[in-house]
Length: 341
Image 1 (tube, rainbow, N blue to C red):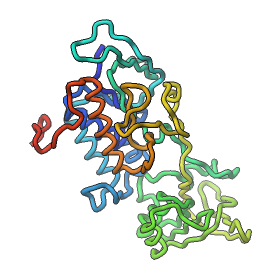
Image 2: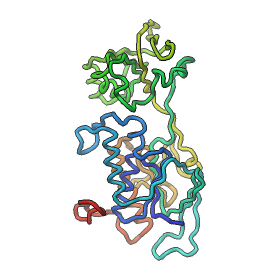
Image 3: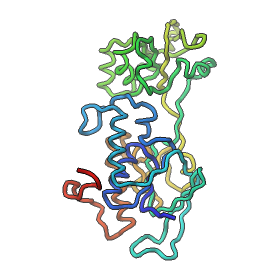
Image 4: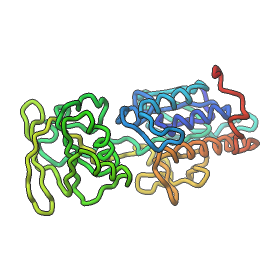
């Protein structure tokens, strides 16, 4: 059985950058992800959404950023397992450890019946397995896929359509800004008086052609084969209003679950894994980076996830090989990846 230096659990942007850095450090690497493709939420939820806060990109489409990260990560040929979940983890003693290698290693069982051996683990699972929060309405479920959507895979489906967006976070505001140029009309409602999105995005939204109604909620959805009409109401005055719509985009957040990882003996705060400044968990050899990791002052951003990935991997390197330095040196002074120009 192959034994890896590091197993990265999660193939989103943080995990992909961790895989690249592990290759840069000469580590035998594998990636395990429950999704059928690499890229995490970038490819699974909003491939056509622009991202503005990644260094070096004034703006970049999610799917393009994901592809660049995939290309970068695969330069060092990590082993990749997709569509598979971890079911169990065990810490094993190595009776005959190789010189300079740890005396313990991890065994990871997965749903497909495989067992993976690794000296270290970097958890980059984002918010874990996630499902969208749904409207507590009797008729909402029957219109899912028939005018009620939670994600945007193709913006073209909203071309020349009347769209209602429900939500007050970054996703709702961003889609209002990204779709108003192709939709026939957009109404955005939020149940609170204030939005939870970036201030500049909210400012742009109020300057856009999007009709904004706060504090409003959905009361009922009507239609035959697809959505045709919706009743919304002001949750303070109880005033009701009917809108003719073709699509409803629900951006109400997610319900997340980190699954079996809760049983690994890690320090978990709410649904996050507590780490040190080295991205170490309380279990030696296990690190966490990205949205799943928490520490004082934590910001859940792709930009910070990249730095955490590098920190986790470089410290995993010293865990495996105490003679190695955590600081990898400047990449401009290193040998280029195999096959690169």
